[in-house]
Amino acid sequence: MKLHEYQAKQILREFGVPTPQGEVVSTPADAKAVAERLGKPVVVKAQVLMGGRGKAGGIKLANTPDEAANAAESILGKRLVSPQNPQGLVAEQVLIEEAVEIAREYYIGITIDRALQRNVLMVSTQGGMDIEEVAAQNPDAIATVAIDPLLGLTDYAAREVLYAAGIPQEQIRPLSALLHGLYRAYIAVDANLAEINPCAVLADGRIIAADAKITIDENALYRQKSLAALHDESLDDPIEAEASRRGIAYVRLGGDIGVIGNGAGLVMCTVDEVARAGGRAANFLDIGGGAKADRVRQAVELVLMDPNVKGLLFNIFGGITRGDEVARGMLEAFETLQVNIPVVVRLAGTHAEEGRAMLQGTLLIPAETMQEAARKIVELARGV
Image (cartoon, rainbow, N blue to C red; front, top):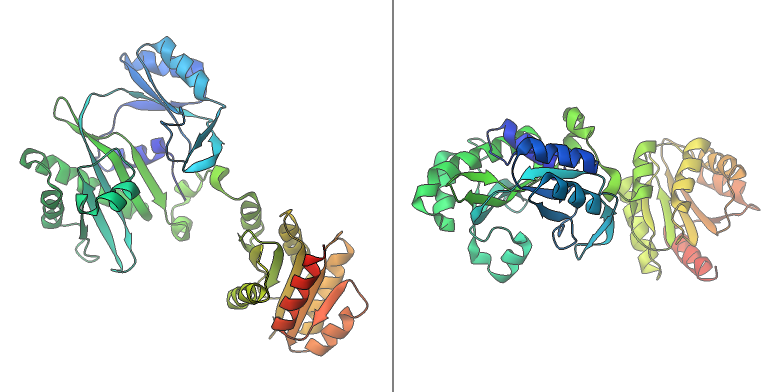
């Protein structure tokens, strides 16, 4: 779960990381009021979960409160489009922040290195740029150090990575303190990414987080309830967001064959079989244990929200759940749904034969094997 810049900076401040003064607002009048309180030139920054805000016109400098109001008016309610996000996002809030005179920019970040199975601290003197671009063009410009999971970020490791990055001697101590604050914040909020870019050295020698990005591990939101409440659905796929509200595991895959199964492994295998048959799955949907009519109806509704779906494949293995009960749930669900695409059902396991017999003569086409079901639905979908 990504946090907005102002939210990330609020967290960093709680752990001693200095940031520019500022407030988030949603109207030009409030932007003017904040600029007046700050009493200095400000930067008006769109709060959208996308990169390339500056190039998209989402960051503007304002020397007076009136200019701040005008800048906010030009950003709020506008769809900002960038190469990283060609569909764009609408800016509903702006951060009004004191403008600072930057003498030098660094990049600082912490993320998970899955190969090392550790958190890794990264530092580069080429701040202000996309770190992916730096990594691709000049990987030696990024110094890294793996963080010991038992000891955490030690003073020695912090100094080691700063020296390796080529940070000037006089900035080692203040930057080391900033690294420790970033790491404490990263651990405290269960983040899997925390970046300060740029980490700005100001003309007066101070070092602050001029911009910040934090991404929270969604698997930890159950213990980060205050952060979970900040979730912004602007980046979410609308069908995936609806599936989450319904408590159904759904991932959109971009094809035209809807896939519903019970069990993550079975659904993934079904997606592969659809591809083997020459088709492409539109989604992953794990209906979970049981297949009561309401659960089936909600699953089908989710799949059909995707206008690209031309066929629907059920792959159900009856273990504890009996195949005839599954078939009954499907028939009851489809009585309340208007489905105008072919539907193939593969039932296997307990009472599977009875379940397939119940489907005979209905719009639901039975199949004995997963491979047969995949071939049938791909062939039928091509005719739609």
